[in-house]
Image 1 (cartoon, rainbow, N blue to C red):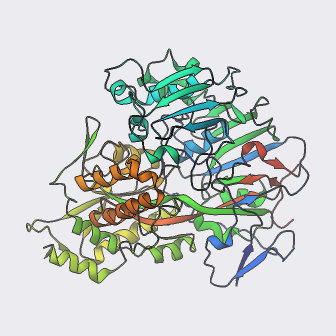
Image 2: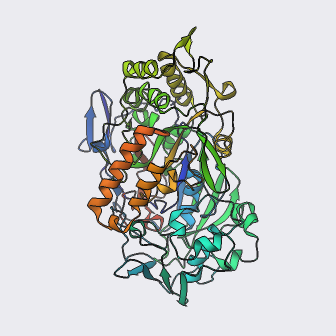
Image 3: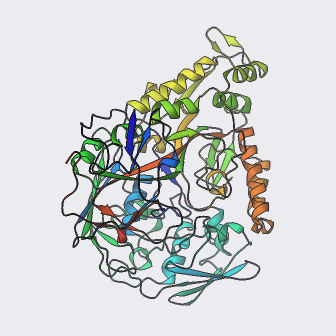
Amino acid sequence: MKKFLKPRYYLAPTLVAALALAACSDNGDGGSSEGTGGGDSGNGGETDDLIYNEDGIYSIDDFEPTKGEEGEAIDGGTLSVASVSSAEFEGTLNPVFYMSGFDADVIEIFHNYIFTWDEAFNYTDDGIGQIEWSDDYLSATVTIRDDVTWHDGEPLTIDDWTYAYEIIAHPDYTGQRYGSNIAVIEGVTEYQAGEADEISGFNIVDDHTVEVTFATASPATLAGGLWSYPYPRHVWEDIPVDEQAEHENTRVNPIGIGPFKVESIVPGESVTYSAYEDYWQGAPQLDGIDFQVYNPDVIGQAMQSGAVDLVLNYPQTQFADHAHMTNLDWVGRIDRSFSYIGFKLGTWEDGENVPDPDAKMADPDLRRAMAMAIDNDTLGIEMYNGLRYAANTIIPPYHALYHDETNEGIPFDVDAANQLLDDAGYEYIGDFRGTPDGDDLTISFAAMSGDATAEAVTQFQIQSWEEIGLNVEMLEGQTHEFNSFYDRVEEDDPEIDVYTAAWGVGSNVDPDGLWGPTSPSNYTRYTDETAQDIIERGQSVEAFDVDYRQDVYNEWQEYFNEVAPAVAQQYRIAPTPMNQRVNGYSIEVGNNDYGYHTIYLSEETPAVHGE
């Protein structure tokens, strides 16, 4: 009989990336979880907080998302934060250029968003910025507080917000943030094309106020659709845009407006922060934070010994082995990340995704058959103890208002997959199926490296495809390190036919940012007239009506499953462990009462398992 300490609090979003889309490591979980020793399960021997789970399978009902204030705070102290990864973090510590979720973890400690939102991602008035909309939603007035400063002491101005748009829309911009959410501002497309020297849609009234004019009225602007990170003009204005991603201000000396400022960085490994006493929400309760990347193979021992206080990107495969630790509290929520299988269907050319009708994976029947062959429920249970489960659509339940839970998805059905391939003309040539033209068919599959679980999942997928007669081989016979994997996927490496990866979505549900015709993040490079029409209707004036917008995105989810340029594989439950001395922490979506500035320690030394 398995048992674990039931979390006693509820989670809130610690800085969910508004607008930002973060690439995630899908296979970075620690499969080789070491033994954690004996001792009674529970919190200091108490049993009231224990639940018993005989089959060892867990669900979101076993978690709450916030740990509030439980003990008296000590004076200061340093919080040890672990980010679990089998690879180094990339180190692009710049909100307009980063793509890795690990870099996002680093950024969220030293930076803040301008805006806040509720659980439905509608803007609230309790953040740095407030928005007053016109009746027709074609204009708005954005006002920011006058008591916010950058870590170098310079005051935050509204120009620092509009400057972010200037960088992202600049013709020399090298990042991947430009999309419809940026182009919705009047004059952005002309500026991006080099036809204008400034963005006409911004009329700065004073240091804290700007009048914004939109090219079109889009409902996305009401629900997390505006860019939210400020960007300090006084730091960047003399540095060419095409050099900013690699500049020392990104890699070595980043600054923000958050509760902690960066003191030192060991590239790819660790970051040391100190409290920013002039933080706009008040001085943090901690003296500092030590952030360090931990390999999944050793994170369990670090948790057990009290070497780490808070664990980000916790490996779900280890939960059943660690949940009984007496020195931990747990919070959890439905994650904003989901894993998917993507099919390479074109190339990125001159700012657009250009589908190739002759791509090896161009046949949607072939793509759907490959999706049908994988038993994601079994994977979720056997590999992740239920903390991952089969996905039905490309809009995850994190976007609860628009996720269509009634959609049947692409079901696991080996017989149907075989029939689909038979009907489409993929006849056997020896041990494997060939193309409808009678040629041999070998599919090159790219996957990320990780631990034993990552390798096992990859082999499970390949064997599943072999069961329906498809010859799928790992790219170059091996999995690939996180950063190099995404480099090759982004660059449309012609050796890749299929890849498995993950996305972490932001506050904006608009699919244009991930799957749109001009989105560089649309790694499948697929688009068509129907998909574009649905996206445009989701951005239309009619879509200000929530019911209409829900219908549009239900249609999007249905159509995406039909053409299947990518197929959502698994949604995730994100358990987050923390040492019992940690308080005032939440990962609950829309809970703006908590942040790194509210975290405090109730003991001088961390709790140790079994003591």
